Length: 273
Image (tube, rainbow, N blue to C red; front, side):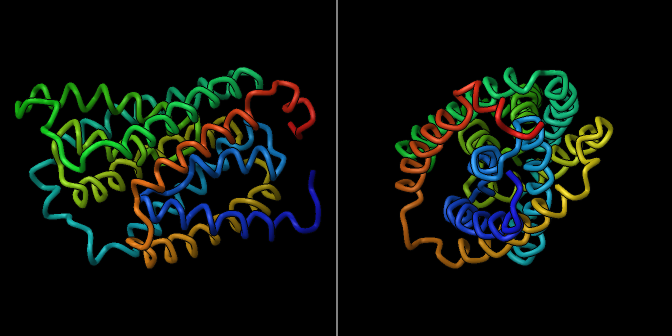
């Protein structure tokens, strides 16, 4: 339901989400989606492209802020891996956005529920994993490219269907799949996420998902500004709270909120479409 404080609410909610995401090294878009649907009264079909647009702003902002500290040199030997991820993610992001617009709101809610619960479980599992493990993929270029494309297909699908940057999938893939260190993986995640999100947005634009400029002004802009502020605060607070503990707690919260918001089909009947 629209009310006169919608813009302020969107701005205020985005800040703590971005702070928590920044503490974990993620954008927090997976937590923003239930907020868009549960508190800002959007249908799933509206919330996903809006979330993707906000994710693009946060990615560009993160690249700008971290441009002086990002480990770009360490990415040079891993260019084939990153390119294979981008190719796979770009293909599925395009197809995923097309597919998502063909689904009914109820069907999309079910799929979002499965994806969010899966991400929540992944965060919980990752909280118990060691920081470094031997790479799953052998150091053979052909195998790395094939594995990268396959993983990219999954990442792009999740990105376009949930409206997220995909860092919660890209970073573990680079660390555990290819043996990259956490700093390089964080940088690589932004590099892979940027074109993936752009592809999804372009497809949603073609599907007229951003035709309502009022919604864009009342939600995307204030949430993007809140996300920028939260990202800065989250970066300043890194190390104060254990990232492992945060992933465990927020994984549980994500699962609970996903069920609360997207498990009831009747919920969508009372939302704006």
